[in-house]
Amino acid sequence: MERILYFTDDFSQENQAYAKQHGLIIRNAKAYGTVDYLEQCDKVCGQVPTAYEHLPKFELDDDTKPKRTRKPKEQE
Image (cartoon, one colour):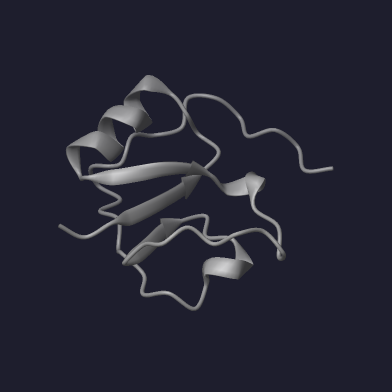
């Protein structure tokens, strides 16, 4: 089974259920810096941090992805 990291800032129940249904491992997109340890994985998707951009991308099906119900926090 492939290990797919799903980087997001949406941790709603709907999005967690979506990730579980598709076998994705949710990670906080804003928690990774350029010097941080890279987690081993086969593919990445979502709001991929720069440090992971060299890895193969997993395409999310936008028709089945839950719609955001809240506004994202403003970036500082």
